Length: 198
Image 1 (tube, one colour):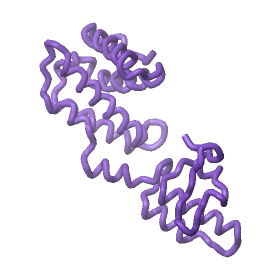
Image 2 (cartoon, rainbow, N blue to C red):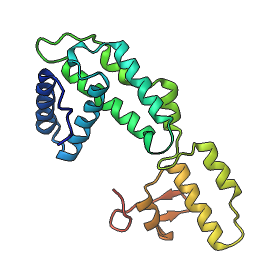
Image 3 (tube, rainbow, N blue to C red):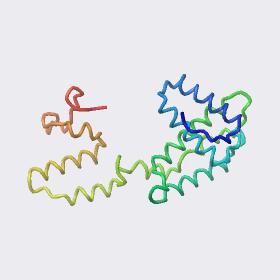
Image 4 (cartoon, rainbow, N blue to C red):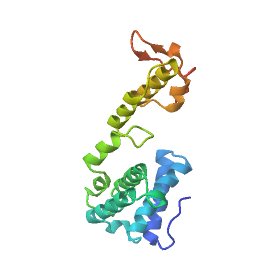
């Protein structure tokens, strides 16, 4: 399973165990997904010096978010991706939403909400073209700079345009054929028998 720091307090170990049972039993997730959730909580627990989860306050969550932002801005192997920041915060927030419903636990009811990124950060994240570090305007500039003089170049422009505008999965995009595109209705038919959809 996910690595849990050996110095973690026994009360936290109990919550780790109970939360794991909850994720497996109620969410019906596979072991890898559950481990990813526990790994995010372990990262947070280590940052807080493995203090009991019941003592975590909003100011602590703010410090944790600032640390994740700092790591996000580091270059190379020391840094973490935007996706890791987002998923870590989401998973920790979900854990505290679960924890505050446990009998005998008194947490600030607003605490789980503080694990969300700011509206501006979420907006920047959603404007990123999926799978790249480009925002929509940057991707559009690349598209505009592409030549369209021959059939191969026109095809390439169509592929890039489709990816930018729709966010279609790469596997589906590369299995599309001309018959799947209707220029009259401007629709793309992703027939799962012929197109590699999810």
